[in-house]
Image 1: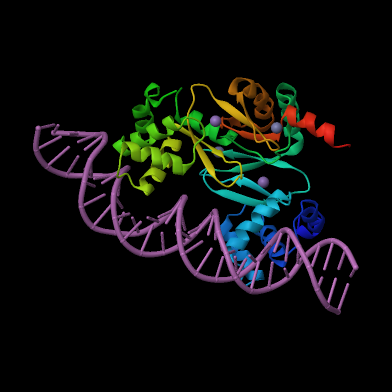
Image 2: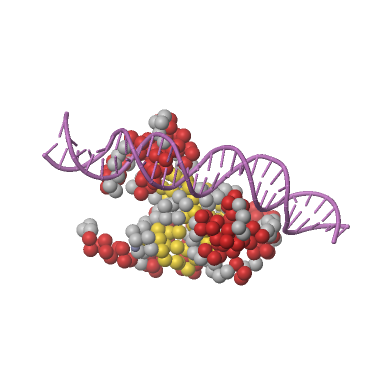
Amino acid sequence: MTHHRLNYVEALHAHGYRVTPQRVTVLDAVCRAGGHARPAQILALAREGDLHIDRSTVYRSLEVLVKAGLVLTAPGESGIDTLYEIVQETPHHHLRCTVCGRETELDGESAARLFENLERETGYRLTGDHLMLTGVCPECQASSNNQVVE
Amino acid sequence: MTHHRLNYVEALHAHGYRVTPQRVTVLDAVCRAGGHARPAQILALAREGDLHIDRSTVYRSLEVLVKAGLVLTAPGESGIDTLYEIVQETPHHHLRCTVCGRETELDGESAARLFENLERETGYRLTGDHLMLTGVCPECQASSNNQVVE
DNA sequence: AGTCTACTTGCGACAAATCGCAGTAATCCC
DNA sequence: GGGATTACTGCGATTTGTCGCAAGTAGACT
Ligand SMILES: [Mn+2]
Ligand SMILES: [Mn+2]
Ligand SMILES: [Zn+2]
Ligand SMILES: [Zn+2]
C-alpha cells in the first residue's frame, strides 16, 4: 500500500497537525522502504526526495506520523532499536523466530480472538494492533529435536 | 527478586559468556532499579557500584544479560526508547493505557492459555514472555463514555 | 490576495549510543 | 598455582538521536 491510498491530510488534520512538504516526504520514504525500516534508511530515502531535509525533522516527522496513525513502530531484533512501517490496510502482527530470525506475518483476524479473551479478562479495550511476538518456528523446533536430547 | 536468587553464573556460562565484575555490577544495577528502567538510570546505579565503569561497557553488558535471559526489555511509552528489567520468577506482561498512561501487569499464566490457540494455528512455540500491550483501561473507557457521544 | 498566529523547520549545540582497537583479565588446562 | 588462550574492558573517535531557539510557513480569517 502506498500512502496515496491513505488520506494522510485528513489523518494529520484530525490530530491537529499541519501538512508540510517534509512530513509528506518522510511518509513517502517510509512507504518506499517497504517493510520494517530503520531510521537511517528512512533518512536516506527522505533525502532522495528532499536533499536538505534535516535529521531532526525526520525524527520529529516520524513521531508525528506515528501519533497520527499513519506509521507503525516495531521493536528490532535486538530489542533496542525501533523499526518503522507504513500502516497497512488491515492490521497484522509478527512472529519472529529467535533461532533462525525468520519472520512470519500473522493476520489481525487470528489475533483478534486472542485479544477478545484478553479484553474479557482485563477490561481493557486493546488498541495496539502491531505486535511482535517471539518464539521458535516449526522448522527450528524440528531441527533442535534432532540435535538435542531432552 | 534480587539477582542473588537467580544463578547468573550458570546463565552466563551456559551462553558462552564470562562472568566479569562489570556484568555483575550492571545486573545489580538493573535489580536495584526496581521496575522498568532507562539506560541512564542503570548507568548511574552501576557507577555507584563501580565508579569508573564505562558507558559502552554498560550497554554491552545489558546486551549480554538480555541474551543470557537475565534481563528483559520493553518498549518505553514513546515506542522509541527501551526499558530494562530484571527477569522475574514468573513471566508477566504489561497493559499500558494510552489515555492515562497507567500500567497493569498481566501474569504469564493467564496469557499463556491465550497463546495456546495461536501456537496451534501457527506451529510456533511462543517463548517471548514480556509483552507490552496497549489499550484503554476500564476507567478511561468509562470517563470517555461520559464525555463523548458516539 | 493579504494578514495574523501558532506550528514547524533548520541549525547549532549537546547527549546518547556505537565501534575499532590495544591492553587486560576470566577461563581452561596442565 | 602458573601459563596460554581468547573474550572483555576502557578509551577515543564516530554516529545517532535530542533540544532550544530564531526564522519560516501552513492554515484560518477576512
Ligand atoms: Mn509489520
Ligand atoms: Mn515487566
Ligand atoms: Zn526458526
Ligand atoms: Zn486509563
